[in-house]
Amino acid sequence: MDSALYNRHILRLATALVANHRLDDPQGTAEVRSPLCGSRIQADVTTDAGGCISQLALRANACALGQASAAILQDNAIGLDIAEISDLRDGIASALKRVGEMPTRWPDLALLAAACDYPSRHAAILLPYHAILAAAKTRNVQT
Image 1 (cartoon, one colour):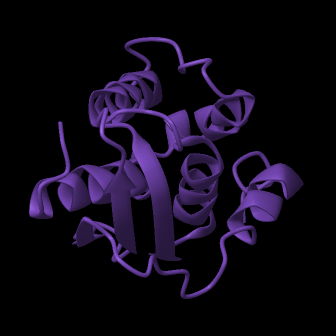
Image 2 (cartoon, rainbow, N blue to C red):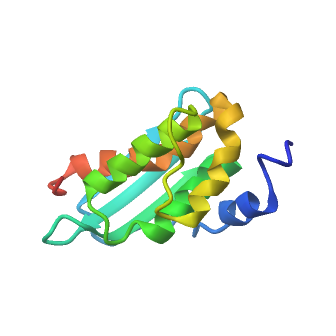
């Protein structure tokens, strides 16, 4: 295990998600999988009248990086609209490819930058964002 990649902060975040967390009445639900690494993320999403995320439940069967990314998103996504989630995903993807800087919206995102040198881990990091976007498209979640 690479200590620069799987440091104590990443491992702390990886254990932060509540197992089997579900919303009682989500507006959208989706499961996405990474064919590259086999990681799986499930998302339940509810938005308010303005199209901002009002409730979110993420469940992860992923590596520590995928779980950490999901935990960061779970802790911070309430109040964002779906376009902001998409923009964050795109910014993180660019940063992981060293095409741009890691978004600074949430300090914990900086922890994911250690994965730049590990392209096989990028899909797992982006998977929670894909799950929310897919859930938003499943049933009347405003985009």
